[in-house]
Image 1: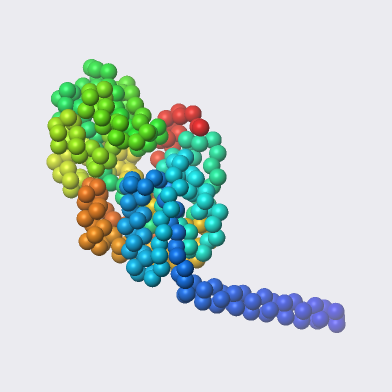
Image 2: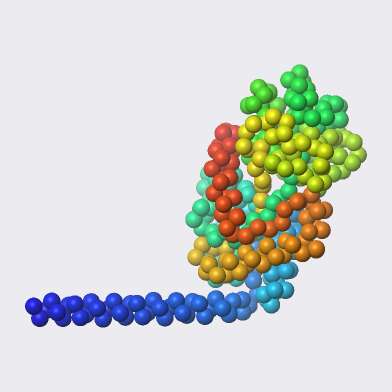
Length: 333
């Protein structure tokens, strides 16, 4: 009996000690996060300087720096569809001082395009904010005489049709596959490393259509080399108000309504209050005149959204997008 009482007392003391330690640790963590940031923050950008991801990382980073009172340094670690940068951030301490700036492919397509990845997209990152990558108009070459999706489909039924994309497994690649599937076509997706050579080939008549960003397509549109015949997502672009969406023209797959995104994330385990703070500042930044003007120049209608909306977007779009990429039958590198 005495041994049982002593054991209960020891257990009770251990429980109280553990609880006290937990409370102390909680207060310690809370105090630490209240002093964050006390030194520079690094944003690891997964793509080269000068591109959309880099530009957004720098302009949003500038706003974060102003509000947080610490320098925000953008470091470019390009390569392997963002995998190099993602691996570097995954291995960093989850203290809010090292963040990742990348695009949809880093979280989704890379799972199919590479045999192995040095990170788990579902488990290794704390999602902070996502930003629309903008509309991707499908542009038909002038010689097709297509002014809408129906006319382009009819052209593709009668002619060999090559459609340019900015990479295997990219959203334009998926669109070509879905159009082939719905309309019984045999269009060929021709992949490029980046958009510049793709639009050059469209202008030269090598391609019968191409799909890419508004910012890079604008020269082809303004010169009359090509005509935008459809845009993805459920709403029309402010830059191309007369161009109907795929949905408006009878394209049925939900894949035609997906939005590619650029995102900000941190290593998993990053304190939630820091996630929320940065998330809120990203949303604030997106409403400033400077960033609104920048987005308009890229043909992007939506600015940064917070971590809750990003999580909803990620959870809803990842499974169907991943399935679509797998259906392309690509050989992993």
